[in-house]
Image 1 (spheres, rainbow, N blue to C red):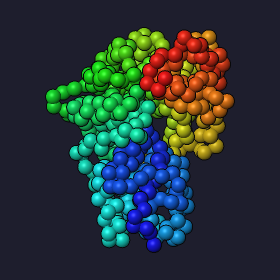
Image 2: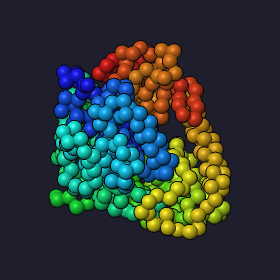
Image 3: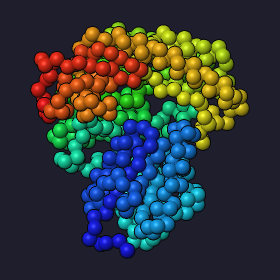
Length: 452
């Protein structure tokens, strides 16, 4: 029997993208307003929510595996409430309740704001609840708690997607594209900054198409200029961009706006115009490369990262070589690369000219080896340079090292006092690897900021 006077403990396990991290944070704040306290001890939790991603089959299978491990917990603690939220919940719906009878709650992508009332319904009735309705009223999240304010925070400015790329399930599980009013965004950003946040990342499935349908009209670039003016903001980022919406106005903002970091994640997905057309990406190889050239002309120090899918149905060796050639030409700072996998409801899942798994695996290894070579070379080019780092905390490498990221989003580890956490430091880069840089801090390179 649960002690009625004991605080109820809530654990949310996040899978997938930064959008899910933002939604998980909203869930925590909502449940804290109902008296729950966050825990990372799964054995002690009274409420467990898996906030899920279905963008790739491997990610989805990982969620089902995790869910299976919760069954013994439920057996030993019947009052435990277990929920699945996010994209898998939206995609599978009530079938999840049949697949996992010990599951109490299925909460779709538009249901985050209703979490407290649905948990209360489960607790009072003991019945399973499934909510997968699309609700296009974007309610602002609860305010941050002072004692939990992070150094960096995500801020969703829109949700959904209207692109319907043939391989992508997002429009089906996140709904159609809708932008939040700029005043709501600015108010949330102010709340973050008032609580000590130094870096904000603006989020959206197609973030640079923000503003369509808003009255009065506002573009994404205009929103960036307005957010950048807020007092206390040190750094501003955004993700994820669609190349077709990388406008001249936005490129100019990347070059001009002081807090906006010199890093753009610009998913290309493939280097073959034929495959891009089959993916319904609405640009070709030359148009994509023209965007890259325009970005680098306006902001020579910009760091570019990307997403690439290998083995899309019908991809030939020639198509794959065009992807490799594009990567050699662009020389990305980093890449997320994946083997194509069918996703439910998508047009590509119905194509018949699928690529053999071993061929996809070989292509992925070749692509990743090429990118690793480029990343190491680009990182080593930074040796001898002093770079601005937002100090995030103690490094996992230990040895009294601190860690943080450059404006170009590269991880830097360096030795220094913990009093620097939360401020800016300017170490000189003395060594480089594929995933991080090693810095050496001179005494005169520290900017006295909060936490210093």
